[in-house]
Image (tube, rainbow, N blue to C red; front, side, top):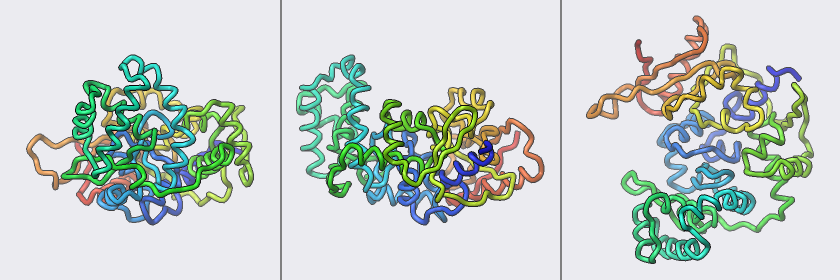
Length: 364
């Protein structure tokens, strides 16, 4: 199979091309997990994969608990569908905790400290959602020092241990709520059943991808990832390119949009970070220059499914209102041409519709 065909299938699986789900939580379910340490760009990642979504509609899905933000899959936040949170954590949390053991020793978070912290956090959220600051106060009251990096690590442990998950916002502040109040009960899966489900769902939302991609994405060993693919192989197809074996769900398919197709994604978008072994399929040889800039506000321009430059929002001067136009500066790595310019303007219009604000190209 040619690289262009693999790219087309991957962009369709990512729900960036072809039919899009109608609800934000359905878009998250389609990808299984959406990396979300940067909250606003993560909402755009969901929104651009959802038909007619706005920033407000994605916010509501998170506030209502249809989408859960928690540490899962890797040692960072992800958005997951509430029906997937329980089995995904059961499968991946033990390995994430094992990876964090050295850092926890450095912070003095031994087993006794973690157990006291979990009890204090559980008591606090039993009375209702709590902010990060309130949970820090609850830890201090229980004799657990929350200073420095201890608090975020203890909150991460509480998420991984299924004590807390994201709660409804309170005056624009994020809160944590009791996990069992935000995530519906479900019968536990047998380990092999969970691995098979993980492989099938990952490949339906990210394929064509390799077993190595799955291993990096879900904190598995390569041996576990290969076993997951074997267990979930029914209905999957394989393709080989440059010595790599790619797997994909052939039922996830659609025609590509007219070329050139332009997408504005963020640097932690699943189309970029979802492939630990084969990122070059989408990013190409330009990825080193475009992704090594130490600037969290730089995002990625995709043209015909491949990385073709950077874009960023130009922040308004302090004190300016939040209702004015959003200025976007685009830095293509090659000329877009007249057709590419029209496609870029269409992408900016989609972003404007999502934000509910005008979006204009910054000059200079």
